[in-house]
Each structure stands twice: as structure tokens, then as C-alpha cells.
Image 1 (spheres, rainbow, N blue to C red):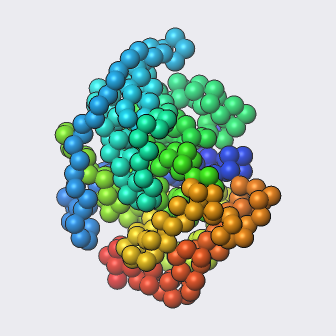
Image 2: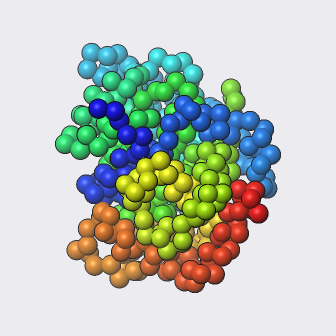
Image 3: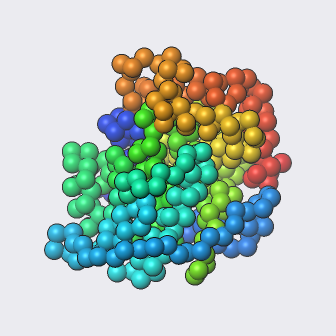
Length: 346
């Protein structure tokens, strides 16, 4: 049976409680040049100063590890334990430092603070898709069918990232996206709505890398820029209330090939929120409340309500009104104008 070009892992929210733990819904090999922001065209298209470049250097402790009878390596850093069977020298050299740089960006995006001495987060990077499939069956158990349908890269399941080495830079972008899902899983006691979590995770995808440095900046995410431009030029802008209340599975089920547009509009939404000091403070306050276990209480959500898609629909718009902006109409007018300017369509 031919696999669908969609992200069915979003449906795993029903079992994991996460609004989404899916990789971005697109074939990365086809859009690699547009995905990573490696060209000066991407940099020239961004407004304001980009985030500073960070050296691709971190302290790594290397030891032997094996997946069954397949030899591999354990790469231990301050915040991660990366177990890999990949022999890709570039990946082995750069991924540990890249993830530590991404971790620093996660703190900036969310307002969370570092926890020195905390338990390192696990990442599995397999050398091939067959190895990844075997690991997926081990990690996800009876949920594996959903995850095995993923075509590119990997996923985060209950705080564990499972990736395979696609042998191109898209692996880094997917790792950055899933790594933020992972951090939120480990740090938040309560779940924030899908628009916030997915919107933040697509912020983490954009980067530019040289042999010695990496620059992580949401404005370098040319894939999501392309998604946003498609939304606007095709007249498929989602009304704010609908965007907030939906999740990736809604869009995959209705129009699988348009699912990336959902991520593109969320990318612009969180970009806009973070561009306004008051909105940004509200977003960080929401995350802080979720970390402290105060999010449900702030919205009046009963403890008996579950954590799946029904929960997301119940909290999505109320959370936005409570933490970001009560006047949706005024916000949407400003947001759409910002999105058009961001996409250079105004």
C-alpha cells in the first residue's frame, strides 16, 4: 500500500494527550533548498537583526552503544543523551552542539529557564528508516502504526525523540521542531493549546549553518514562509477562531496536501505574537502557568477533562482570549496585515 503524504502522527494526540507530535507535513527532500534558509536570499528577506550565530561547539562525552546487534554511539551533552547508529560524520560532529544551541533558543521562545543538573532528554537517531521503524515499534508499542506512516524524519513520543538520518540538513530542522515538543512535554504539567505548541515548534525550525556556527531564527524558516505565501495567494486564510480551535489532524483529514498551510499560518501567528511585547508576555505567562499547573484553573477547566483533542478545542480560544487578546476581530485585522507584510504580499 502506498503511504499517504501526510502527518498521521498528529492523530496520536488522541492517545498521547499532546495536541500534536507530528513532523511537518511535507517531503523535505523536495524543498531542501527552500527549507533551511541557507542562502542569502532568505536572510535578505527578513526584517530586523537576526539572532547571533552560535559556535557549533559543546562538551560531548562519547561512549559505545548498540541497538540490538547494530553498533552505535552514545553522545552525552549537558541536556541530551543522543543514541545513534548513524555513521554520518557531519551529523555526529554537529548534531550535539546543534541541539544544545536549539535548547538555548527554546528557552528564548518560551520564557522557560534552564534547570542545571536536570535529567538529560533522550534522542534516538537511527542510520536508516528500517532501523527507525524497529525502534518505533519498541518505543510506541501498540501506537506504532500511526508513527510508522510518517514519511520523513521522525517524531516525539511521550518525551522521547526518535529520528532517522536523512543525510541532509532537513534532519536538523526536524530535530529542532521535535526537540521543542520534547522540552514542553518534560517541563509543563498541563498542556497548552495546539496553536501555541505547534506555533512555537515551527519557530524552532529556521536556521542557517556553516561549518563552525549555527544561527537559529524563526525568520530563516523559508519553508513556512512558502506555506504562508500559499495560504494568502490562494485565498485560503483561516479565520482566527477556526485556526485557534483546530489541530493538525483536522487539516490532514480534510485536505492532506494543504496541511503545511496550517503550519505556515501558525508560524506567522506566533511570529506576530512574539513581535508585540504585551502579546509575548501573555504567551510566556501561559507557558509559566502550564508549567506551574495553574493553566486549567485560570481557564476554569475541570480536572476531569481529558488531554486529547476535545481538551484542545475546549481551551484553545479561551486561552487566547485570557492570555493574548480578548478582542479577536481587532487582533485578526492586525495579524493578517502583519502576515501579508511578512510574506511580502502587502
